Amino acid sequence: MDSIGEMDIFSNSQNGGTLTNVSHNTGTSSSSTSSRYENQKRRDWNTFGQYLKNHRPPLALSRCSGAHVLEFLRYLDQFGKTKVHTPICPFYGHPNPPAPCPCPLRQAWGSLDALIGRLRAAFEENGGKPEVNPFGARAVRLYLREVRDLQSKARGISYEKKKRKRPPPQQIPSLQLQVPPPPPGAS
Image (cartoon, rainbow, N blue to C red; front, side, top):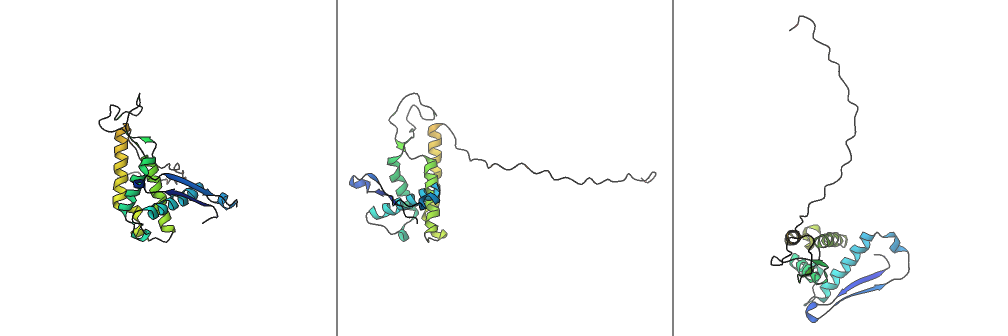
């Protein structure tokens, strides 16, 4: 862990809590050696840890399950910025609605998917065993798939898996074997 103590603090939303971001920069250069991904992963890990502390009753990471991860993801929805049209909305299925509507703002599927990937890695980096990783639970994977499908239908745009760019096949000089013609009269 580097010397920047940065933590997103969540209060329990049932108690009227809000999201607060507290940063303490000690001015050292070790943060410049960490990648943006590593910094974000550390912030996400700290945020989830804070969520567990504020959980009623407080929850130890060792007792955390996929159900708690789902609860966390649903909690994060209140801070989302992606309009997700409901099936009764006149703009349901339209990628670019022409007017505003009262549909809820949610976390985008891609953001949730990336968050779970970072938390899954952080869990294992912090001593968790892969086979008990709550971020890799089947329920979490199914929830992410459900969110993706729901948002895809609401926007009228399907999410397609990005295809990996493969390098062009290298040309290997082929050896041309010369097969002599059969001798005359040998058929």
